[in-house]
Image (cartoon, rainbow, N blue to C red; front, top):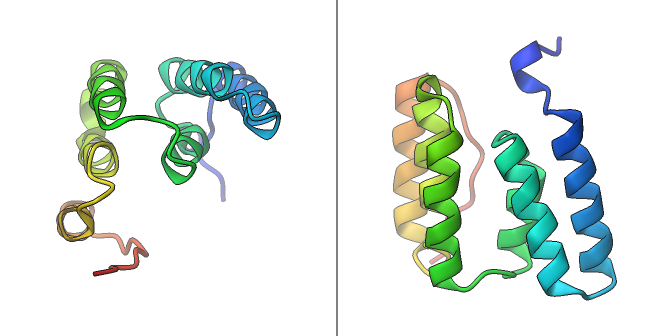
Length: 119
């Protein structure tokens, strides 16, 4: 069952696809621009965030700036998402902190999040 809150905005999806295309063409600056745009249109576009993080497209400073921008557009009712994004952004070298944050989110939302802890 897919709920309305699980769906992302079509404009965000389009921005994410454009960002992926630029990433495939190794045009980092344009990829970052479009992936960030996807997140500003709809902060639930986790694919854009994952691509930015997994491919290490952002410096630590850029990660903190993006984190702050995302937190401004997130709905107050999604504090768990704010916690998760804050853990993901700016903490790539701190897996233990990320793992602890995931555990906190699991307790708050009473859900199971699959995350691997790497030391």
